Amino acid sequence: MKLGMIKYHLLLLFREPLILFFGFALPLIQLFFAPETLTLGGETHHFMDISMPLSITIAVMALCFMDSAFSHAYSRQIKFLRRLRMTPVKPVTYIFTGIVSRLGVVLVFTVIFLAVSSVIFDVSLINRNWIAFISMLTLTFLMFYFMGMFVANMLKDSKHSQSALFIVFFGFIFLINIIPALETLPDILQSVVQNFPVFYATNLLQSAWTGASLLSGHELIGVIVLTVIFGVLSVKFFKYE
Amino acid sequence: MIHVENLKKSYDGKEVLKGINLSIEKGTCTALVGRNGSGKSTLIDIICQVKEANGGTIRYDFEENKIFDHIGVQTQDAQFDKRLKVKEIINLWKSIYGGAKSDLDELVEILELEPIMNNRSDRISGGQRQKLSILLSLFHDPQMLIFDELTTGLDATTRDDVQQYLKMLNKSRGKTIFIVSHYMDEVEALCDKVYFLKDGVIFENGTPDEIKEKYACSSLQEFVKNCMGKVVA
Image (cartoon, rainbow over all chains, first blue to last red):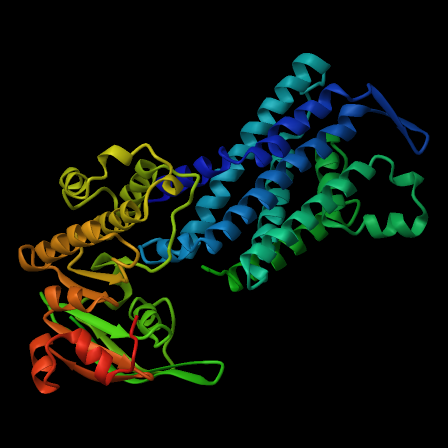
């Protein structure tokens, strides 16, 4: 049953042009427009160290937040979930297979992304803390997945859920793109942006990628807390229709 | 097979089902008839454990926590994901049930689904969609089938085909069938027993012949017109 459900989630994912664009094409396209270095706060960084977490966060958001949530809201709307409910498929199976299928895609995408970065842009893959990076990638993935499921279930009408998802997703995309230029923003805006989940996610992935301490800021705790909160809420408010 | 006793259900303080008593006996075809909004689909949802009742009990002659191993359900208005092809939906059901326990090839042939196997589910007709629903509900060879307005919206020929198939399932294969229908000719042709739901209670029940005799009606349609209000459908 689980393999069939994973295949079901993957079939739907690969038939969504919008998700394929934001989840695969856009992060790769961004690579080719990236400058070699970037100066932030007087320090010069290899741009890939900044760009890598941002691009992967965009992919994770598209694949988890957008795809899982849109797919869920749409299945609610057409009452396919209601039909599925009258089979031995349990909500936990539906959620679990949704997570496994998309996590698999995110990991494959990351491998492709790293391979392209390494071959074309000479990004070094040696001396990276892969365990920390994959762990933070998975944690970030779960946070966005549960956030998406929460939004998809939160509103009574699934069409409103879809509208809400669009607003939140493009809000996140906007935030991601201003993160490299965060220091140019007024202080008050900086402190606001720094408390968004998307900021936690990119900073955490960046720390894991560059080998910086994961415990130096409050991002790890923020992501864990948000994952737990939205995980509980998305299960508690899970709606079939 | 399923025994409903004094079942009650309210929405926002409004009582939709006011103490329903109903029995679906093994091997029979039973119908539930009532006006739109009379609570028929709610009753099916409660029987299928999709909604919770506010009172009363339901006894199943099988394991209560595994009802979908024993029941196949077709639900009103449920659509299939338009991104999936017919064969992909069938494959999904195969994986859910660990393979088809019914003879899938025979079902596909009888229901004439072979020509549309590669079609997307939003590019098949209403009749084909209903036939696909029947196939999915029969997938695991359940003892009992529940159909909620299965033939609504179908053309006369397709309706006749579907009815003949249901009759065969009930009479030749011994499947217990519970249908919700607005077509009285269908109920008369298929069902051993019929329950009429009105204002949240079972207004009348019996075999079609018993009801016609009791109310001196020539058909169930006449009974519905004269005794249950102008329109059921």
